[in-house]
Image 1: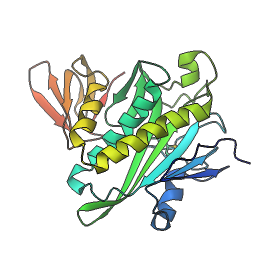
Image 2 (image 1 turned 120 degrees about the vertical axis):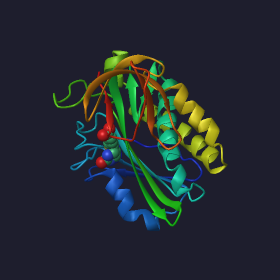
Image 3 (image 1 turned 90 degrees about the horizontal axis):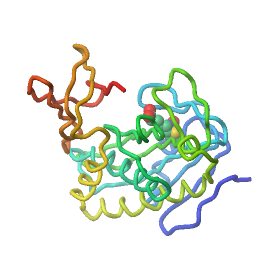
Length: 251
Ligand code: BTN
């Protein structure tokens, strides 16, 4: 019996799973037979939940673990970072309808102050120069209050708000924004999505510590390019441009 449901929305198929290895893997496995504009698979527990750098751990039934499958064939491979920006922006805007102070930490985490509330894992399948399938995996820490020591800066909506939250409300708020931004993306509103992402960027325009393969340094986060590269200006006035995983914030 599903413990969570979603009001039916045109063009959105909802799949509830008591347990699965990973909702991203589930949708990737079934992507060819799922051709609705948006298919959402949600699990109460994942036995092999994946994050960008390792496993994604989550207490059973406490949080939101879901993935959204789309087929953004109008998006060209060179614009693939737009899908990350759209996903981050929709989660951030969804959470903003419930509370304030969320930001997007490059490339695709959602933060509240210096704590990570949401992790996003995006996996695309290209067909020639176009994106045939895009799976956006979203893990929202909703009602979990204690986390493993190995996790970087975790927090949850319950810790932020000081009360337990209704997971359905959080899910609906995010999915609402995702549906409308996905339509905007397909209609070509690339600039609106890029602007919304940059406007919410964690520590943008501020001087902070970073770390690259050569060690720690202080720099100001200037921008994120449409390609997804982050652009920093260090204390010597040098511009530094990095791809995903080449540099990290020190928090
Ligand atoms: C990160 O490392 O920050 C990304 C975490 C993404 C976790 C979500 S939970 C739902 C979906 N299924 C997965 O296996 N991973 C994503």
